[in-house]
Amino acid sequence: RKNDVIGVDVNMGCPKHFSTHGNMGSNLIYCPDLACSILTNLRKNLDILVSCKIRIHENIEETLKFIAAIQETGIDFYTVHYRTKFQDAKTKANWSIIPEIYKNSKIPVFANGDIFTPEDYFKLKPCK
Image (cartoon, rainbow, N blue to C red; front, side):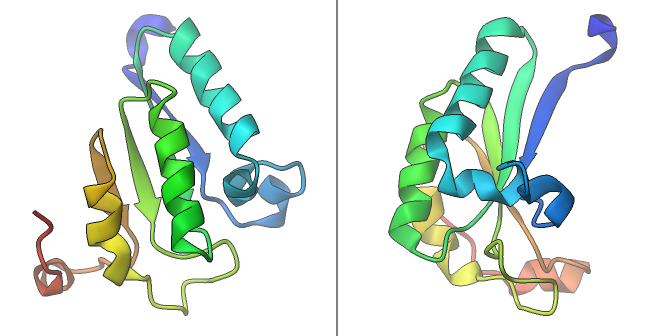
């Protein structure tokens, strides 16, 4: 029921085959038109928060282009998981690109990946 939901978060970051085989999940970073169409349609048809979670592209410039495109859909915020589609939890998240992502964000963005304890959080350098 509509009154029970305050937002919809689209998981565009799942690297598992059941998500990616139909160009969903983390494959959407390679299909920006489809990703933007999904977000635009949700934004046009819902009067609740709309957000998404993405993974990074192997190329930072492609990540930034994708982020610019999804921001234009009118979503309220997004989350970035700082691994690529091809990296699993054994690969350390690439926190070094957080400042570049934040600098290019017009809407709120959340960081995701490799924060397991309060100490992990305090190891991060703040973004200004």
